[in-house]
Image (cartoon, helix red, strand yellow):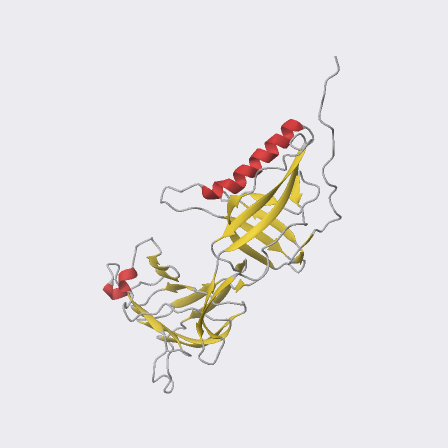
Length: 323
């Protein structure tokens, strides 16, 4: 007797590469799951690729505005709060036969949903959406799977192809430059004050420096100090905000030559090169772990107890409104 089967259709034909993605233009996009596996999203020769139509959420970050009524009418803006970003990401998956399609569909589902698996310490590991431009510049954003891995549920889908419209949630709405900005200052060899004539050594103050943040929004930098040093002070000269790390107030004691300590400003964290928690050395409650706004900021690094080899490395990744 005749068998009744579903009509056989083919998946939507891929467009000519590179894919033009709404809100960002032409780019190569890759999803990196929490294990570090890279999943190309715009390789039209692969068994999965992004469907450009329907992509959204890649533009400027969403904001909530708080205002106060003005006696003469209207209102005055009082506070601006960036909100988490939601990215809508349509994706087509296919295979040479049903088994290959099923394997691809399951593997990609796991790659996205594993962002929701809680780690032993209670945290969650996000995936990363990476956007590479033709000029080689790369921006990334951390994403968590929210919903959408369902398929079309239409006749003939789910056999050798199907598509899903994913919703990805981003706790930080800003895109991050993959290349860090680094500022390095190192102490030179001290010299005798009277030989051959009066001189001044830079053994403690590494100098006033102008740091440029090329991004669209503020960043919270990380500082890496290399000893010898006993007291490290960082000052943002335009606001007067500063914080100091007194190594002699910690169980570690003063940094010896070659030893390191890293200060993270967001979240506040101080760790030695061997993993010791040295946050007790910060001069709380007066310490302000200041940020760097867009543009140029004058700062001063000062190391007491410095000698040849003492150094400070300031590191941050610029953040941007769009990809």
